[in-house]
Length: 254
Length: 178
Picture: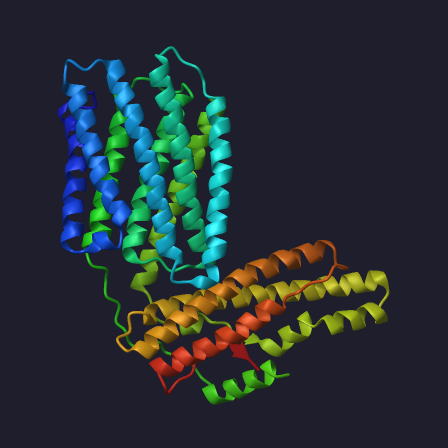
């Protein structure tokens, strides 16, 4: 069951990509893709990339080295897409609040720079292994990308938590999905790159299962309407507004 | 190997934090009531006195250097407590503003938007002010400018009152005490 090319393995490779395409189709039908065009494009790209890699894996004429080169190319292109999605998420989070927008962008950009340096240092100290350079290179590249991506998405969550910046439901859902899947991928690729685990099917299964959960989270946050809270007037206690207005006027003009 | 373990721990902590944020967000959505009761009224006049540079200058002239540092540290700790309360009040007001954002009438929605933006400005200024206060605690003779926090708090109070008036004209909201 937990082996490569088992039914579960096939399902976890294909299932999330089919669901991603279905999600892209659903959000296009609802017009949500206009609000999140980069994420919409990412969903389509990631699904197609998944199908192509799956096809190449099954096609006997494709050598393992060729497959890993294809994986290299896909990882780099997908990495660029993910950074574009993160930038769009940050824009969605901050654009309504000019008081905090500039500081927020600077903090997250600063965190990004630090993370790139950290990821480069971690890559430099990666444990060499006996696999072909293209495979080892992909391991290091994946660790580098996921360290930066997970760090940046964490920085966005921290920023929102510290300053209590309100999330809208869809932006939160997209960020949550990415936050979970990138953190898990970082842990797995760090174990692989560090030589702690090698060539075990559970690494692939863990990554694919987490991505599957991530797509389901996106379904929930993007397609299921949020709970409607009763909009009764906030119970505002005691005192008189006029008294406070006068008091504040006195303070301001003192 | 060591780097791998460090990264795995970091990833696990990130996961826990993100899941914690998700959980607290869903709890906030299910219990939006009694937000106003979480606001702790703040004595703006007392805070104004604490941040008044003239008072510091007066104390500096009247007290010995050692006594001044002791008194100044006490004042700074009090100031930090005020700033923390102001920051917490701002956080509550963000949530109140968020609850009012989907309001059907445009003036209420606009007041809510302005309240949130002012509250976020206060959170930002409070964070900077706390940094400066902690710096001044280490070097009590240095200058300190907490005035932006006070200005933001006054702006915030006006926004909160406007939103309160629009949503419930009969009952006011109070974030300052006399």
